[in-house]
Length: 112
Length: 111
Image 1 (cartoon, rainbow over the protein chains, first blue to last red):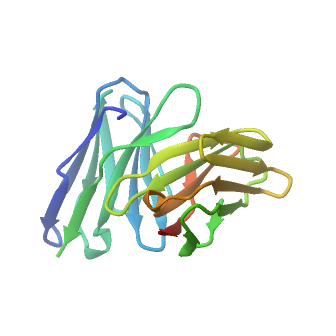
Image 2 (cartoon, rainbow over the protein chains, first blue to last red):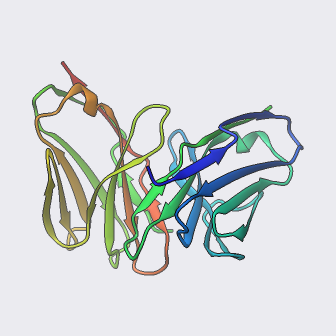
């Protein structure tokens, strides 16, 4: 258990509404990541953070924004949710000098 | 776009057999390689890391890396029904702080 929690764990929302997912860690790791997982695509990186207020885009960043105002929290926002953003979202942290990543429990998001 | 390829499976093996999972990658400068196990409805769990050519053993698991051929494999000895899961290969490229994941191989161990 890498001390990662995600909230909410499940959410159903309507097209066009804003949605914010939260990732919280308890161990002050510098790097945090947001992925989405869809059948046939595996895990795809949305955004990641390498420190407070320091973020960068991943391969599927369109339609998503992130913020990190505190070391322990990394927020993922869908400004105007679309059905194509229905997915399972995982947060991960990277520990120490290796590149190992550990995942949170995930958030299942359904956009109707 | 750096790619990581895995056979989607399912790979079916009888209980007690050796399961062999393979992964190829396109970035020749890749440095670090990881295997994750993911049970249905759960999050990925790191089971092996390998950084240099050769074999690395941990219990019933052996990771094998061949950088010249750009492949990494995972062997599971004495497979158990509890090993039934999707196995994800992840690779860190030569630059940056990101991992690229394969789409995963479904393993089914039949008792």
